[in-house]
Amino acid sequence: MKVLVIGGTGALGGHAALHLARQGHDVTITGRSSAPQGTPLTGLGFLKGDYVAGDFTAATLSGFDWMVFAAGNDPRHVPQGEDFGAWLKKANHEALPAVFAAAREAGVSRAIQLGSFYPQAAPELIAGNVYIQSRLAACQLARNEGAEGFDVISVNAPFMVGAVPGLPSAIFEPYVAWANGQIPIPFFAPTGGTNFMSFRSLSEAIEGALLRGEPGKAYLVGDENLAFREYFQLFFDAVGSDVKLEERDEELPLLPDVAIPQGRGNTISYEPDAGETALLGYRRGDVAAAVAEIVAQYG
Image 1 (cartoon, one colour):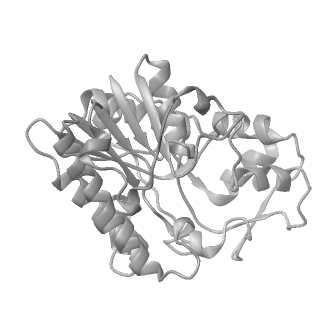
Image 2 (cartoon, rainbow, N blue to C red):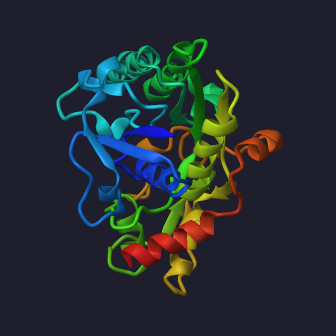
């Protein structure tokens, strides 16, 4: 199949694009700038564009069989000086469903909207969080564009763990440096925890959704429920450190409180539906292996 991965120059989209290419698909990735040199992403087709700016029209999307949308905006993507809520509304409530409408008009047959787990795993957080509201809107509005001959499926993922060969990571490079004692931050983890999933498992779930997903369905995917202390300890163990992290009810600079929507000290845990996991065909128990890959790349 000819597959377009919008957001394919980023980590999750890039990993999914490479996975789909290995399965024999003809994959093109998009981004506001070209694929980073030194990564295997440069071996894929490339289409420059910014979905928030309206660059992906029916004419642009014509000729693709499938589409994976992995470019939903979160707090990291809000431009400096922009109103947070207004930007998320523009990006996730308006521009995102417009891309799916264009895909339908272009004759794309199946499309995946890669979203966030919060609205499904912790619906009690929706009312008080503009970001989670925008993620819920993206999930619903994208699927609303589905029609006969155009299947739209959401894959909603938790905290993600992994690496794309050669691709820098503003998240994981500091984690590895900290575990190696190269950043002067005390050795502790905040209280609470969440569900974690590897890039590899997610890419498999995306492929499974393209092949076998039920049209209009929103799949809550995930893997391991871990306390933040258990999660960060994986990095220290992977680098061969003897440090045993303690747990503190204190903000960790590498995981600031703003990045914990449920609030420090609270936990979001769930078990993905066994039938849906089998249908999508993604592996479980892969988080420690993903951390080992991160350490191998950034250590």
